[in-house]
Length: 441
Image (tube, rainbow, N blue to C red; front, side, top):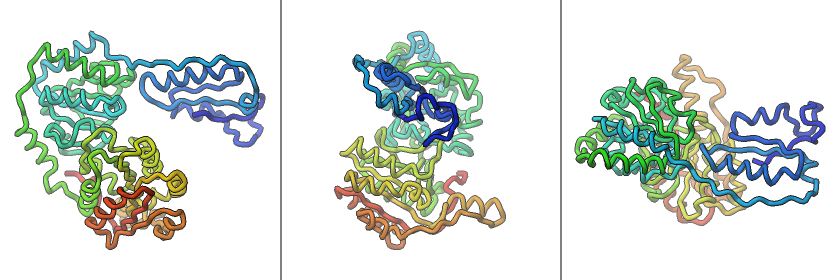
């Protein structure tokens, strides 16, 4: 981020200048990895070089540079620096050997894939390790696609809290190999030994004490770990029958919640394997975390632990610009979609043919259900008054489709058609109140 500032001699004076923020850099520190204020324009090349190094090394996080208006206006002769070449470090040889020893001794290891597997482009190495060990795999929401859900080794993503299926079975595993995840779920593990692979040393053992770590790039560290394992143990015999049975238990018919399931499966059928699903904070998005099958890395995007309303559609536009040959759909509720509805203009202006899929219950549905359930049927501020979404689409110049009676079959057809059209589409799905997508099972 290149941000402005007030005039140089007024920074910190708090005179109330245009756009002034008290402690601007302190305000942005919690959401950035690196910040710098540039007063002398001659410092700009070095500052940009430093910011790029911070951006490209270690754990990926935003960086910020602040430049006052006079600094931007000044003219000065500078020497431009060459672009840096930034290598992501592998885990140390000793830590990789120790990790391989731990895994070789484990009778029933479990692999846990997080967002670092995806951002580190390590799904191939992660899957290879799982296959060599015949170890079941769970993922975080951010880690979906670490292994294909078509694999019998994949037993899904767990819920942050109250996932009875995994809580009741976690004692079966004597070693957890966690890759690119902070393991934030409270009380999920029961004292097992953990081997944690993360590029950020501060994350090793942050949430669970019984942890040994490999600090390094996920792709390189996993590759080294697998090579070291091959020197210690042979590939383990197939557990396909056993793990297929576990997977069937995890996804048995009793876990199906309607109408969410019918909508999620309709979307999955309409999307190609490499299509990008952007999950908004809405009933269908919540349910998709475990029931929308993901076959390739980078094809399931979430707002992570931030849980931002309004996240899905702008993110989908960015995903489509980054991957113009991929089908992209943003799943939103009506309340969340209205946070960034103006981005329909962006889609039209730049001809970005991502599909906005809006499930409309005329409410912040999850909030309303929680209010009713927790406060003796009372609700406050959870219902919304929406525009006519078809007229809204027309006003922006976007193709608009309303699904009659909220039919999942019609949704599948219309979504499939919309993905073939080289222009943005808004699909509205009128729905009623939905059951709790987080119920225990």
